[in-house]
Each structure stands twice: as C-alpha cells, then as structure tokens.
Amino acid sequence: MAALLLGAVLLVAQPHFVPSKPQLPQTIIIGVRKGGTRALLEMLSLHPDVAAAENEVHFFDWEEHYSHGLGWYLSQMPPSRPHQLTVEKTPAYFTSPKVPARVHSVNPAMRLLLILRDPSERVLSDYTQVFYNHLQKHKPYPSIEEFLVRDGRLNVDYKALNRSLYHVHMQNWLRFFPLRRIHIVDGDRLIRDPFPEIQKVERFLRLAPQINASNFYFNKTKGFYCLRDSGRDRCLHESKGRAHPQVDPKLLHKLHEYFHEPNKKFFQLVGRTFDWH
Ligand code: A3P
Image (cartoon, rainbow, N blue to C red):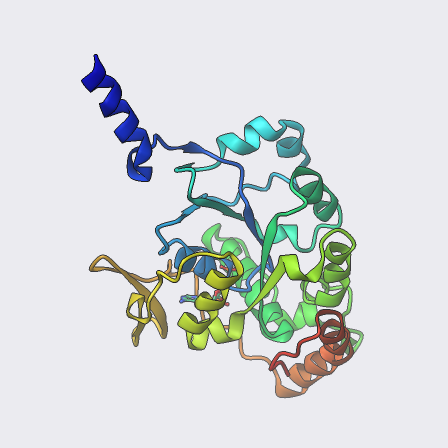
C-alpha cells in the first residue's frame, strides 16, 4: 500500500506524468487575416511548453459558437499539461468589433499576439485566397482590378481594404487591453527571417528560450522558411505562400498612397514603425 502511495506521489511530482487535459487559452493569435497567422502558430508550436489548437475556433466572433459558452470553447482546446501554455488562432478576431470585450470578459490578462504585414501586400494576399477558394469550386472570380477600381478611382468599399486599416481595429482592442498585453509580430520579417521574431514571442510569453535557429531552414522550392523539429522537416501547406496577381504599377501606387495616412496613425497608436510602403 505504502509503495503504491509513494508511486502515486512520484508520478504527480513529475510534470511529464501529470495527466493532460484541455485548458482555456492564455494566449490568442487574433490576426490579421493573411498576416502569417498559420506560420506563427506552427513556429510557436515548436516550443515544448506550448499546446496549440489546430483549427480556427471562431468562438468570440461567431454567434453560434459563442452561445455554446465556455464549456464548448474549452472542448475545442488540445490536451495540455498544467505548465503548458494553450494558444488558439482565429485571424478574424482582430477585425471583429465585438471580440475585444468578449475576450476581456473571459480573461483580462490574456496575452494577445497580432501578426501584421504590409497592408497593401495583405490586400493582394486576401484577394488571392478568395480567388483560389473560387477556383477550387470551379466558380469564376473577377480580376483584382475589378475590386480595386470603381469609376476610375480606388474602390474604398472593397472589404479587403478595410481589413488593412490596422489603426481602426487596433483602437477597438486598446479600449479593453493595454498595449503591453498585445505583442505585434512583424509578418514581413517573419517571412524573411523567422527566428528573431519567434524569439521575441518567446520573451513576450515568458517562455524559456527553447526554439533554435536550427528549427528553421530555407526551402528554395517553396521560397519560404520551413520547420525542422526532431529531425522532421515540414513546410506550410501549399495554400500558404502563393504568388499574388500582377497589379498595374499605377494602381499599386494608389493603394500604397491610400494606406499612407492610416499607417502613420497606426504607428502613433502603437509607438513603433514598420517598414511598409
Ligand atoms: P501568401 O500566401 O499571400 O504569400 P495566414 O496564415 O494568416 O493566412 O497567412 C498566410 C501568409 O503567411 C502567406 O501569404 C505567406 O506570405 C505568409 N508566411 C509567413 N511565413 C511563411 C512560411 N514560412 N511559409 C509559408 N507562408 C508563410
């Protein structure tokens, strides 16, 4: 009996043997759509103390999911050990006005990760994703010019443009969370050189530095960094890192101009600048 008891005590004392069960996330990747959210989640998952939900959960932005309550949210999380940090990513959270208050009501100390890239580039990526969704269903889809231009001017009603107005969405989050709770990952740098960006994320999440430069290697065929984990190599799905449509340089210039002022406002809001057009 005593031996049995001792065995049980020893088992519980070792974090490795503590039974795993789902926990609510302490960290959420809130967006932005096409910012590199999947790459960020996969790279963060290299850390042994991170447990990541595989699918986009859409708890805070989809009424049906939200109405199921926290028990449902918890059931969407992966099993984890107590010392692990649970993370989920739903890129639509960033641009959904009702989400910040809801996240705050669940956990005001939530650590938020926001990955952003050049807003014009993000628009092209957004278009490309929807274009391919249509292609897969054998449905026609207009050219990007047809979305971007109306009556010879930039069509500011194109939804993808609004999603790139980062200062508008950031303001909604800052009404509920102080800036120190929101870590912004530079998505353009994450593409070019992921390791330093991931190190910053480790520090923000107060994780022991466990991810190494050797976890990343550049794959020439893919044209992007891929991951190496315990001798296993993997690149992101083929839907990540697609070629964008060629856009008339004059139109592209208009797009860059359109984001000039909004970008300045965003830089002021977050006290930091980014290398955007
Ligand atoms: P593109 O496909 O337009 O190039 P999200 O996961 O939020 O949808 O973002 C997709 C974007 O992640 C891709 O957009 C790609 O540029 C970027 N990305 C960043 N790092 C990547 C990597 N290592 N492999 C593939 N795509 C990566």
